[in-house]
Image (cartoon, rainbow, N blue to C red; front, side, top):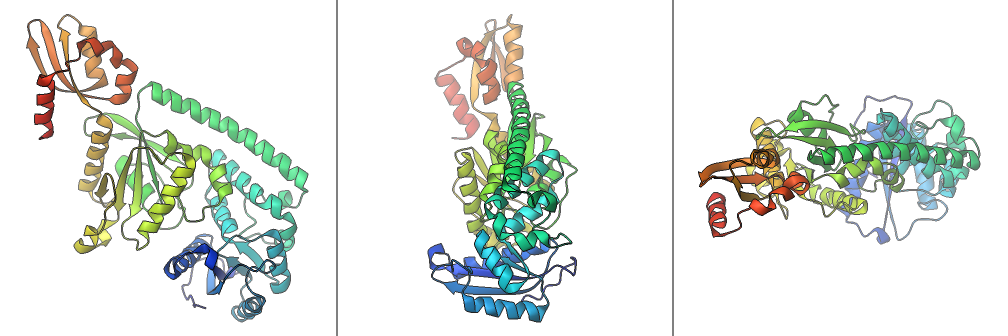
Amino acid sequence: MKPHTHEVAGPKDERAVLVSLVTQAQKISAEMAEYSLQELVSLAETAGVEVVETMTQNRETPDTKWFIGKGKVDELRGLLEMTKANTAIFDQELSGAQVRNLEEALDVKIIDRTQLILDIFAQRAKTREGILQVELAQLSYLLPRLSGHGKNLSRLGGGIGTRGPGESKLETDRRHIRNRISELKRQLAEVVRHRTLHRERRKKTGIYQVALVGYTNAGKSTLLKQLTDADVYVENQLFATLDPTSRNLVLPSGKEIVLTDTVGFIQNLPHDLIAAFRATLEEANEADLILHVVDGSSEMRTEQMKVVGEVLEELGAHGKEQLTLFNKIDLLSHPEQELLTVEGDYLKVSAYRDSDLERIKERIQERLAGDRKTFRIPADRGDLISLVYRIGDVLTTGEEEGTMLLKVQVDETDYAINGYKLADYEVDGAEDKGEKERHDGI
């Protein structure tokens, strides 16, 4: 048992003891188990709960009836009485039967990690889409557990675990909830259809899409705000922002791209939530470039990066072009900054340094700029010359025997749409190769 004395500015009638069970099957280190429990503390505080104590048990396997051992249940009951806590929050997912048994034995509200995260999302959702997604995730989670939430749903006063769909809906029968789930899926399908149309429209106009992804509280929203002057909520707490925000970002070349902030990831992110938020998270799947924002000051950054990688893989976005941004380096010493490294392209930045923001914009521009090409176009073909200027950045120009020689940094997307018209005029020879090598400094 590890006492936790941190006071929170939340409602005093919501007091909780946090419980974690570490099993051999989990194959996680003691450090990771402790980190997961401390993360649960942060989640509870984010939900407005006062954490009065934490408890850990090590077992080979979970107890099918009580989840923790019967002796530990008795110990937990004494702890709840001593601290005058009215809620027990478990760091792992519980079955409906386990919730019912624990409620009867302890006479307090029983919440698990999944339900706590869903509750925070219910508080954070502001747009119609976000509200629909959270309700779908909560109902999908509760449907197979209805028999295990009798006391929870009859307790007056709401609080964690009851926000979102609302008590009246949860007390109805399974058929009503299944109907509601079907209706939510239909409404979300319409949202997805509209979002897809917007994406296709953006693609047709050749606008680049860049998505910010990362562990919750890594600084994605802060970066979006600093890069684009976006009016977004920024706070040092888990899941400070939930609904995706897209803003235009002007690169040093003057080209505009769309930068989108996505919901933060967390270990053991509920699968119901990933499924419900798939339409939102697909912003990462559709992006031309993913900016993976990492909290460089976190001791668990390696594990957090792994979690993000796993969620991206589940979404089918793990093969996307990525640029890793190690954020918050202003909190690290120079020797500590030297330890920040990862395979592939990365930058070490602070969202509050203007010079670092410029470096990010320049690197995005380099990653999206595409190849350098040289075109030799008849001087009287003004239509083709203007097309060259439209699809890329012209680096040098020259005139040779009635033709224009243009060396260009070509925008790949625009070239794919219109560049085929220039294929017959592309210079593909040693002259162009030599110029490219001199430009690259080879």
